[in-house]
View 1 (cartoon, each protein chain N blue to C red):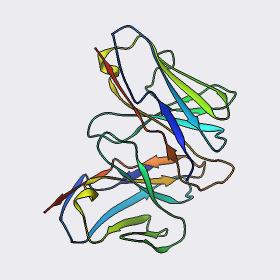
View 2: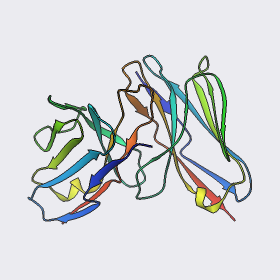
View 3: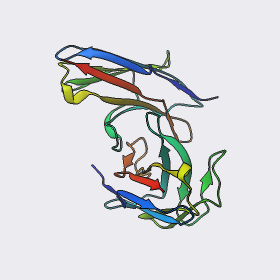
Length: 117
Length: 109
């Protein structure tokens, strides 16, 4: 199946700093990528839908200025957590679907575990 | 509104069979996915159904009834490594995935 690479796998940062997470589709073009957050023992929560070349669409309750999303190419989307705080500590996962082939599975990155201290 | 319902937790015995149910209500429907997720890892794809009926893939099978808005994942010959969360997700008319909260499956020896 297709591969989505997410980097870094884990990061620890100080409160108030910013962290950038990259999501790359390695062998297909992803015009749309999805960013999820998952707290312990909870399901995936969609944060935003990232569209190549345009502004991301954020879900209700997700702060646009805090979670900056850039989707500059068909294979790369980035999520930047700005001025991170301990409550932002979570597991962040990106996914992409090959929209050239509808009804296909969603391919997930490995996830990034963010710990803000 | 759009909604996916699945049990929060299930327990089964090694070697047995377990069925995890999922009901969905979505704006349009373009198929249903099942994913497996081990703690601390990203979900991995198990199955996709868009037509009514049963799809078998090794020890795992998935069933769909579009008229009832219902699906189930059947796991046979359970192994300890099958302990994980199982996520049901429906694809709506906009091709957006609507996720269930997941079913935590606990396998006991």
